[in-house]
Image 1 (cartoon, helix red, strand yellow):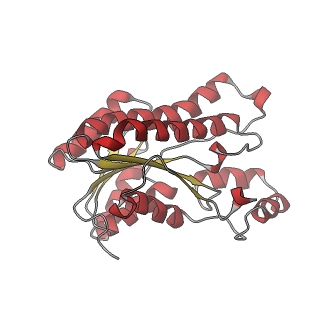
Image 2: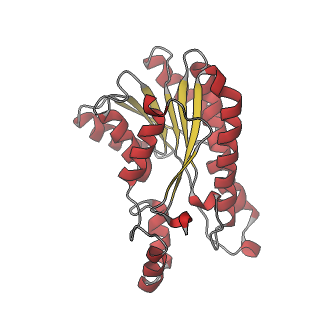
Amino acid sequence: MAGRLAGKNAIVTGGGAGIGRAIAELFGCEGARIAILDRDFELGKTVQAALRAEGIDAEAYGADVTDPEGVAAAVAAFADQCGGRIHVLVNNAGIAEFSDFEQTALAAWNRVMAVNATGTFLCSQAVLPLMKQHGGAIVNMASVAGLIGIPKMPAYCASKAAVIGLTRQMAADYTAQGIRVNCICPGRIAGTELDRWIMAMDSMDATRAKMAKYPIGRFGKPEEIAQAALFLASDESAFMSGAVLTVDGGMTAL
């Protein structure tokens, strides 16, 4: 089915690479007008050019999701180009830190919480006044790390659990106003920045052991998470709000 987001205006944070880029491209192919928000503006512009070459209506904005003024300015600029209508927000921007719990520096903890949790909060706050006028869909990117414990990732696990809680709270506040809020919990996704960090630390045996924890026999692909985001952003999920969609190859089923 094509055109599942026809006529929609969608913002994707962290849209310059990995899962975010895959979401931006898929949403654009399904008819949405896309705003790529990324702290690396040049990377965002590169993706914008690539999407436009595919015939996708795309804009790029340099914005750090932890900066409320920068986020507000980017959202306002895109809204001005879209007649004030924002239909979809995907809170995808995220970072990770790796350390033992006792060795985690407060600065690292604060940095991860600021991007993953506070960034989701700030970007959602920026679009809600517009969405309240006509409804919309917010898709938050959590993680299986928000559902289970992952060794040496205390800040990441805590931040993604916060995203899950915030998703449910926002759904309680805004679903009756026509704004659906759901989140995705991916397992390990190959080719992302997080995956490259893990690969740099792992031996081949460690990687094989981690793959064995996935009943499907492999790690995921950014395009597979993009498909889940498309479902939650589209009218096909019209009866879903406050949902936690786990896309992890069966990892958390074990």
